Image (cartoon, one colour):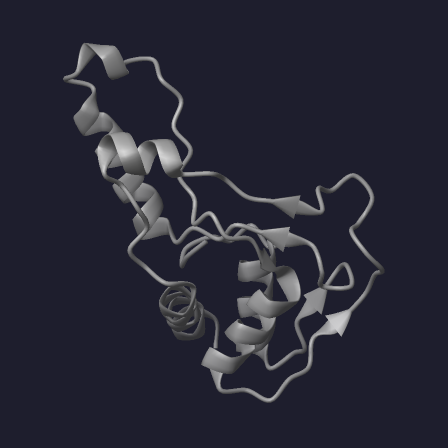
Length: 141
C-alpha cells in the first residue's frame, strides 16, 4: 500500500479516496478478514535487497517472501486510516465474515529474507498510513 495506487478495489486507496471526499469508507465484509500490509517503500527496499543478492550464485532463482508478518484486520486498517485523517467517520460495513472467494487470513512469513539477506520492513503501519493519507489528501481533496 502507499500513495499512487489508484486501484479503487483495494481497501487502502478506496478508503483514502472516500475520506478525501468526506464520505464514509466502505468495507465489503464485517471487517474481520486479516491482511499483511507492506508499505511501498519497504517493498521497493525488499526488491533492491534481493537484486543486490544476485551476486551470490547460491541465491539465484530463489523465491523470497517480503511482508510484515503480522496480519491486521481490515477494520483496524480502516479505523487507523480514519484516525490519521483526523475525520470523524464510521466505516460502512457491507458484509458478514469473509467475502466469497477471498482468503480469511492472508500474510507472508519473511523469516528467510530476514535471516539470509538481512531485510525487514522499516515503516510501521501507522507511519505508512499517515504518508499514504497525505498523498491522497493532497491530490484528491
